[in-house]
Length: 498
Image 1: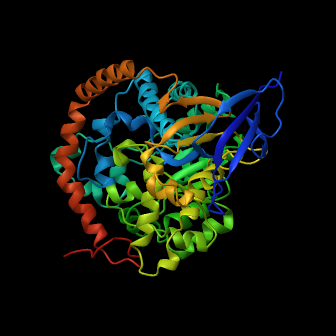
Image 2: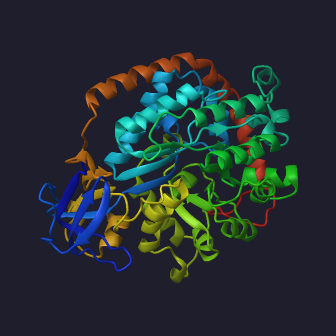
């Protein structure tokens, strides 16, 4: 029997018109079937949900995060993307299946509590996330009650060999301790295919994607294999493309072309492909992405946190690229707050140029964080509150200080709201957050379990921490040198320095 829900008394955000009129919303089996004036008719057996004094908006979509890093929030101060990658042995190794579940669940609870109903999670394992680990990670999202694409990061070229010259620059004493050998490409692809074939979760809520982690870290065989599997299993792809200048310069040294052009040659681009970050994309790259229907997840907070630069999100939109917005993982975002990510996206656009007419508007930012992200994840029915779409709804408390007084509602969502005003969250018409708290989470038990896991991982990865610290100066100085090389783009907020 169909389950009916009538939502009454709330204001419904219409970002395009910058208004929020009062509307009732009828939901049947998790789908919005009607939106009408207050008091509109509803089935006699419909349950009533009181949305009085709330503003309703579509659930936010996190276009890029890493669920397996939530134990490590706020563990480092000043570090770049490349230092983060070279330090993987400290924070990413030796996690049990149960710890990977818990790590992911922490981030999922945070996201949904902060108004995010769908996430694109590039998870990982070393040397590879097993199918069983992926199934457990998927269960974390099921238990948290939100939607997700889980895309394990795959690579068969080590970080130290991916950047030409970096391995040779390492101290001799540490070279012997670092395993820079290539991965088993065939085994990686077979494991990925088994996970796709045996995926146990409802794909309407949690599905499996594929993430060739960074083009430089993938052989051509692995990249083509990822594209083939995505086509065969009808799923989505995401990769960190042109996140840092190090990547952009290293690609030219290795292939004589950009990362995007290289992936284009290998058949990766298409409507199911998303670039993560894209800070160092040029016009040719963006035109390739637009022509193939590809997306970019713009992650402005992470880009600033890691000193990667300022992505040209305006140019992406001008050239027709679908834009999403992401937080990135806790290692380089420290929280999973999509309201903060929207605010960053707005403000970082403004510092690129004094021409205010080119700055991203609040409407564009909100659209990227909802409909743009829904398109990138493949959850096409999400991202918009309209008839026939998923009832993934955030209810903001209009009596919270963020909404006193009420002015332009889309400006207020993007520029004022900080997630403290989230009162309730529905996913598919089911209430998963009530009165600002996750309805199913035991926070006290979660804190206790997380602390025990964090301490255990720190203990077993003590040597990885030592090794990361031992090579930090060599990796950092080598990459600074690459970043000071001439390049046809400048995406930093200041000069390169001496």
